[in-house]
Length: 127
Image (cartoon, rainbow, N blue to C red; front, side):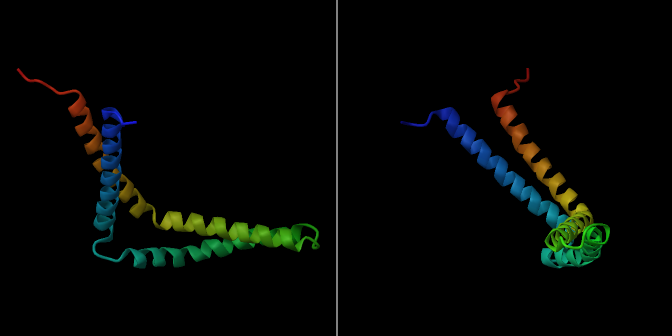
């Protein structure tokens, strides 16, 4: 069975949309980092997030003081969960400018591809 023309154009449009999104992510990343390597920025953000991870782990371990001491496994699980939540919150906060710039740039480039497709489907004739 042969694919019809509309599925072929939809597939082409989907690929163009994905490629423009990836290109936008790269453009946003490069404009935000100003030549710094991404790994250095992410490492610095991860190290800065460790404080919140420790705070979250301590909050999770408070269960040990408040409840029965025989539930060590549950207390450790709450401590790990608190640490993970604290780390993710801190890392998200520290990288928010980079993430926002990358998303803004990707949406802008994807919008250009969407606009081109709309103009192809709805040509404007002047005169």
